[in-house]
Image (spheres, helix red, strand yellow):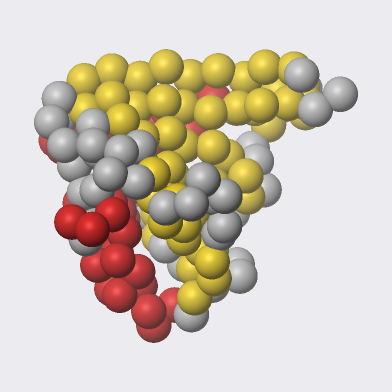
Amino acid sequence: MSRTADIDLVFARAITVGAVVRSLAGEGWSLQEPLGISYVVNNDDLFDWQSASTDQAADILTLVDSLANVHYDVGVCIYHSTAETGGQLLFHAGRTHCSFIPTIDRRSLSGAPAITDIAWYLSALVPSLLALGLASYEARDLAD
């Protein structure tokens, strides 16, 4: 059996990937994950993730936030080095909605390792995003 976990975030106004990454940095999140930096510009519906070195972080944020890509889904992986977990942060066209999917060393509930510790992710993400106009979220962990 596999599981699907994600948190859908809705903002009152359009946001940028850079603003979200900067806001989350105050809580220990970073673009730097164990394999470098991962990002996607989904301009062909293939979700072909790319890798880059950590010294290219500014260039990656410029790319995903460019006006040429505002009508495409874009994403970056974020990682919390202290907690040793992270995942994909996908921004949908228009940039008022994004989703976080815990794909890097997903945290699970103590005593229930199959279930994602959604509460931990919410507490690590949501407070930082309120100042950016976070209006609502929906979190789920489902068995497939």
